[in-house]
Length: 389
Image (cartoon, rainbow, N blue to C red):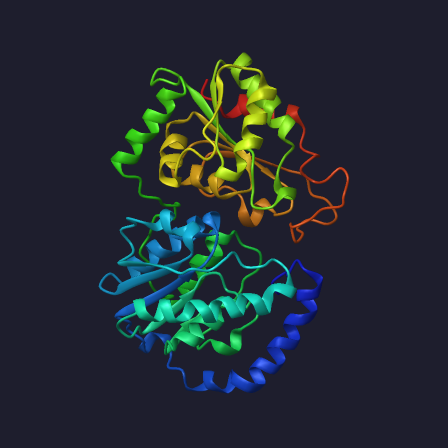
């Protein structure tokens, strides 16, 4: 079986030790677990304590889970970034908000993360008023598997790629570096390997008509009417090293406005507003506007859906564009597109493999870094290819 590649060197050393002692203490309890073909759950809890992109990449797995267990109650526990993504999702019966900060990308943050999980546990338990039969962790992480164990679910299913398998009752095999959407689907498929119904595997987000009206209003207030064609640019990411240089995004905005006569909408979170305003200023074009910090996630999805093109880094909004089927130009560096690239959507992904990619992402000393290797000309050529003729 292929080994999961852990990016951080300390984690690669620490995880085998954790697993050795964990299996010695708790591993024996897996011997009494019933075969999954004898498990018929009525209530299923799914943990999705991830950021926007990873939650979106889990929606095909949730859809398949619903098809496998059409009568079961399915509850999903999410952090705040994922709550808006899954609200009104028809595959879910109950959406539970868990008050947890983002998990640390460093091994030194492991104990703090586990402590935060223990603090959040009572609130989560109060929402689980009835006992659940089956728990799934689609992140496949020591910390979230620990939460499954603390909840006390009798059947606990996840992959053991980042440690914690000793707390699981059933472990789906890991088949190597698949796309994350496929990897999450494999966990669900493991529950019923003989379920052969063909299920649509696209990313999903439910956008209400009111959000679409708000999107049109924001666009109109920015000088973009229904007769205008426009592109959406998201020049930000969860970690600074995952961001293509801002001045290059400004140059691309200017190119779209002058060469292709497109309006351009810059999107981002509230904290991104100063940087977005700088890109607008650098572009020096009246048709380039910023809505960074002015719109919520569902309204953002509606705006992207109206766009002719989306351009952005490896981030949640890039996956959002895939969910609403807007053509995507994705700029990748620290993560590999093979695992995290656009999923089942028209796209061009630009990526230069370097000796240190993939990497932990939180910092970069390489110059030029992998994203800086992507040239403005490459993005311009991708624009010409993807824009409707």
